[in-house]
Image 1 (cartoon, rainbow, N blue to C red):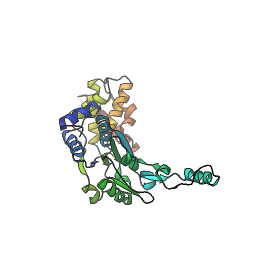
Image 2 (cartoon, helix red, strand yellow; image 1 turned 180 degrees about the horizontal axis):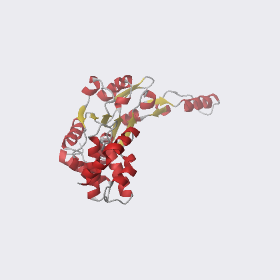
Image 3 (cartoon, helix red, strand yellow; image 1 turned 60 degrees about the vertical axis):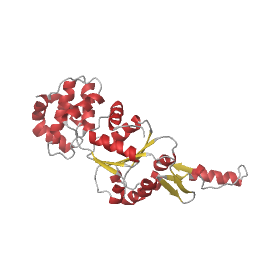
Length: 289
């Protein structure tokens, strides 16, 4: 166990440029203490993936990331055979330059993230990112991995982890996950932070930004979240926008600079038009108040 208390973990995460609320820090602490995977759900951009990255920096541990997508299969997530190397070996054996040996041994494996995490001899944080994008069949496959931290390869046998990796799963909740998967995990929902915390996050993640500009940017984005948008901006967009404003040498918001940089915050044309047509001036005025 790397941390003796939740406070110690919070301090280490802050040192890794991540500011969790008390609930998230507690969930991460319990995940480490109990050796259980942690499922983080929430809207896109609220810091789920960054939590895993920060935990890896804080431990410290190697971060191994599996990015999920529709159609993800064992070959891309766990392992596949190096067929070209096997073919070369067969040809060399036929020519008598090497001895014939088992073609389905560990030396012919291409290790993908899950197997790499299981076999690692160093501390690992395994990030299974956006599990809700993967098919239900792959989600079912994960049950063996998360239950016993082992992987079965028919040609070789069962490979068990020497030491359990710390596992973080993230979901944007585009579909409901199965109860069997949830039972194997601790759970925490990450929402948008309070205004004061979001300002603190911006100041931490954008070194040198004037605090007045950080405050106005966070207030403006908070106002955007109150509108009927297709994709309300998350903390990640607040940080991106603050970086853009700082790069332009700004220390204050006005309607003109917001108009010019709004694409750093909103990523849908319809949302841009909604804000420009009806709400921009009001939001800027409220942010500056």
